[in-house]
Length: 297
Image (cartoon, rainbow, N blue to C red; front, side):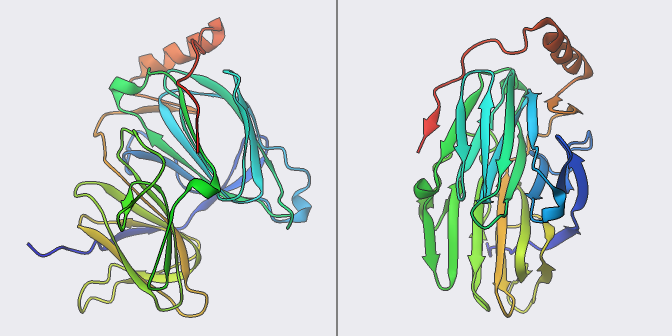
């Protein structure tokens, strides 16, 4: 059977939102009961590059339950700490994949880099009902431990999943995700195999490219900053536009197809489970035990 290129179903222009302590973000989508991007719940692009924004405050201590948060930095850094005693810095090119499980309290405080810029992404990934009350877990991966595949004008940093025989360091995630940072030189073309039935999105944040190329089909142009949502198919094909080429985050994952009930930093399956989370917060029983071993690469 002939492999089929995924065509674009929808192009989303991110909207500006305020989160945390007055942090301005570009949000492509957020948690909703409709669960349109299952298993993905939220995708934010944060950048603090205007001096008139003043001092950076960030995201003071807040809880999570039932989800995974993925932080990927391009410039600047994020200093984090949590209720279980973990403290660290997510620097340029680093990734933190946090599985909140039954509950964790943490804070994330961004800091400008030497150029004065902060730039990065946060993705929320759902957990299946059977794992929502599991033990919290961290996978902290340094820039030097993320493999890059260079081929025919393409550079692909593989955080999770596999590309060209190279596997990413983030493993044992229920959604079986693909999470990659892709850069293509002007005019370069590449294809990325994706599992059937998986949700696939690409966030273009530099330049432009044509996605969904297949034989005589020229595909559809996507310019920065936009999120492309793909139809069913076997692979994502893209050709970089002229000039500076294109850079995008490619994300794919297996949907759980479960009813969800999101409420702020919690995503559970029923309203009763949300009420229990709020009760646990009030009673001081939200954080229950030590997490699984911290993984540093």
